[in-house]
Image (tube, rainbow, N blue to C red; front, side, top):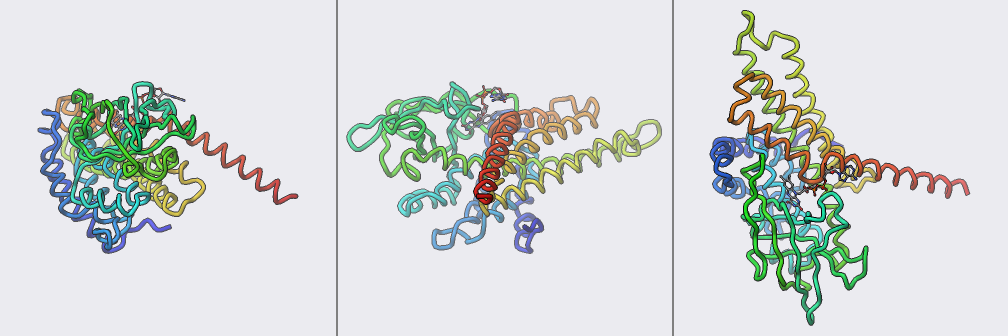
Length: 392
Ligand SMILES: Cc1cc2nc3c(=O)[nH]c(=O)nc-3n(C[C@H](O)[C@H](O)[C@H](O)COP(=O)(O)OP(=O)(O)OC[C@H]3O[C@@H](n4cnc5c(N)ncnc54)[C@H](O)[C@@H]3O)c2cc1C
């Protein structure tokens, strides 16, 4: 396991951190207007971020997912815009799934648009509940040799701006518990409409909306992996995405710590800079510790996912948990350390509003605890069985 960057990765980090500054420059306007920053997206895609993990023979740069993660961390270190970063993250799932599970035809059809910057989405949540994925109802009914998708996905990141959709649904004819399937669709699609842009508390630079399926036609070529294998594929994608929340959070927290340090060195109270007071220092050191801990756990989680370690899922959930909790605490410190200035409508308070969403999107903090506990119990049971076999 190695956590230090190679020289190439250091260059990637620096290049993408520079592009992240462009995101920061537009963040206030985009937040106020509930707009997505297409200009920065274009620049980041043109710099080749989505080509990094794709092999050269498929049109990519032949790097690794670690390179792509480093580039994302670069953007996160300067962007000051969780919404924009979540739109990036929501595109990763589709790319990673097609790369790992797509047939040669599916790769030929969808990889190139994604590498060029087609925005993707992953649609799982339904009105029946986001935490309990097994309750999803969106279904594909057979009609000759095609299927018709009917149902509704809710609160989907990128729904108003995406051109590719990865959608989890059921094929009821396969029988319960074996029917969840992953469909990949080009947008717009006949029969598929997009709900109203949601008026969210934070992350307003990342649009969310419902997807309404009214007899949307799909066939074999739209299914990723095999019919009924969706849950397994989704958990792999979700695990990786959970770890990515950590990269985003650590980049954002690090930049918040720097802003707080600068402010408290310049601002005086009782004839001394605020930064001289230990209670103030404690808040800033907390922020730095949270950035470090989240980052290290995240890279460890990504390493475990890549190597297929037994505890990969636990570590990814732990990274997502820390990302959500630490980002929210750090943004609260940021606001607090700026006094009334932090309480006004500006980038400081926006980052606090944004951070509330990170504890919900991608599985809530409580659900990460549930995952960790369940996985831990499963591992313990398996360990006990292995010991019993060894003792026979
Ligand atoms: C900014 C944002 C972007 C999003 N983007 C997407 C997207 O792109 N695609 C997508 O599919 N979804 C997306 N979502 C939806 C998100 O995944 C769900 O909101 C989330 O999984 C929670 O589901 P829910 O809202 O239905 O809450 P519920 O499932 O109703 O949960 C409500 C509360 O109950 C708690 N709870 C539920 N079960 C348990 C339990 N067993 N133990 C303890 N506590 C429990 C939860 O932690 C939560 O606090 C997004 C959400 C947000 C905020």
